[in-house]
Length: 199
Ligand code: ITT
Image (cartoon, rainbow, N blue to C red; front, side, top):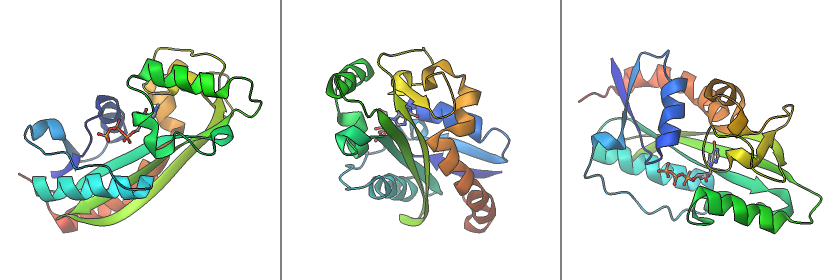
């Protein structure tokens, strides 16, 4: 059995990864298994840089392969904001959504995309990064209870439901995280055997 550490403090991301990795012969540890882990500062200027910072730091500290994702919502009418600042846009999910809807008031263009960059690292070095996206529109008001973050106001193209109205399985078939993950999976399977790992 191979180990990999999912370097995230976001419980919702962990749940999505647990589902995505369920069929794999890989045990996923999380930062909860390392209570004293000193989280690095996310001071990169792109999703790729921030994902790399998180994965590299965790792989060094935990001494096993690690992956991390940096993700966020890019809104066309806001010139790509909140982007890499999606989690820092306002203090809570509800406030983030309220602020976003306020900024979009009266704007006709409500096109947006979720982006996710997954970085895989070993021994403090980033080995590869993979990017996924899902395009859609920002709804006029929140709908649905599932998921997290901006899910209640994001309607993916081809659906008449928000991400928060989809089940976890449905979201995982089309999400930015699932798309990046699909690209990363083959790599993880091939490389873990070579890299080793374990406690
Ligand atoms: P870690 O850095 O510990 O992984 P985080 O929540 O701080 O957790 P990010 O820095 O990648 O993660 O910020 C991503 C933010 O973008 C997240 O907090 C949400 O507000 C938003 N986001 C990302 N993926 C999302 C998704 O699938 N659904 C809704 N919102 C999402």
